[in-house]
Length: 185
Image 1 (cartoon, rainbow, N blue to C red):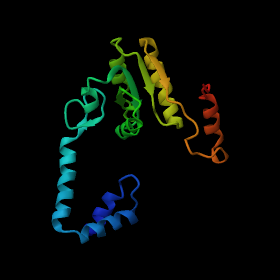
Image 2 (cartoon, rainbow, N blue to C red):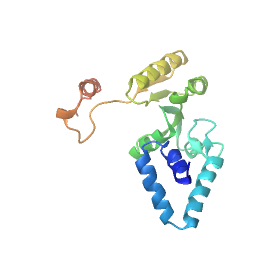
Image 3 (cartoon, rainbow, N blue to C red):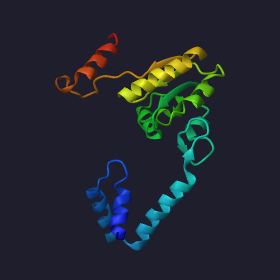
Image 4 (cartoon, rainbow, N blue to C red):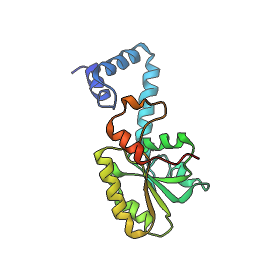
């Protein structure tokens, strides 16, 4: 196997990158100076060496605790459960959530979540897993595990996106939008 084939195989393992895109990236890199390729390789090595899960919430960080867990302005009594660290960015961009996070349903770090919630200091756990069959099952499992401990367990609302056309929405999305409706004031 050639160096191009080896790299294409590795790049194609990344989400959203197929073999064609991998080859396009490789040919682009080959047009760059060797220093550019070396900087990219060095950045990938540093990423693998420095970035690790936060000891409290499992977000990705270069330190013992992530920036969110270290932020004294965050409400530690409010935990949002997400499937992957990348989901945190989406929630943070909305600018509305001031609590902390717990990354883990995909890796089933539920025991660690239960441990965080068992001290009595957690008021609410918001389950923000994807609205898939697996996400719904995980949300139900989290709710059952946390129910005896006392915090409120809520689920993010689901439904039609802003700018979406009702005509093109599937029945499940419309049903969820109707269930999660709010009174207009």
